[in-house]
Image 1: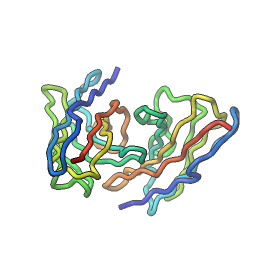
Image 2: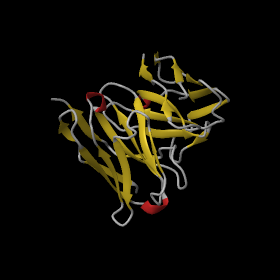
Image 3: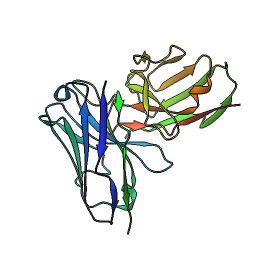
Image 4: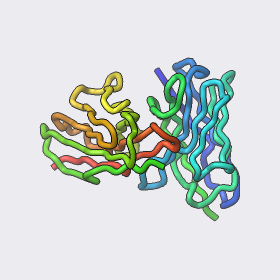
Length: 120
Length: 107
């Protein structure tokens, strides 16, 4: 059974940093692309970032480009999202998703999310 | 960016009714269109991918059709457990974008 467990969320001041983690199990992690998708409280879904299975290709929404960095450690079956220069508008529930084998875009499995709150 | 619109934004229907949601993209997305269900307090769940492919384990009362810029999601016989918000999403072009959602409840 595919399991995705996010962690690392919390309350941070504007301009601060956080690193989210997503521990994956139940599938061969290194062969699947992964993404982060967020949802602001009471709002819709926004794709944030994606990464290929080998980590060699990364993709970002314009709203986070230059501030967020996606990475993965295939030896630890873990996906990361380093978030710097956080803004109030980054406040959201961040979901980790398992995508297709060779590309991002179809979010086949989702974790339960980790909440990031940016506030002074 | 490709803009996704959905209609209606919400609907109420009776158990057993046929429910239809439409999704329109601002440009041709060549069937790179997915549908997700999100129940209150839960993570989204993939129902349909590539416009018409039913994800494994999803009941057959859910279906999707469409092409070009216009797509349709249908529940053939609404069940109480289908109460949720439904989102379409395009992945033809980065950044991938979602529709604003359609909330379905029971009349």
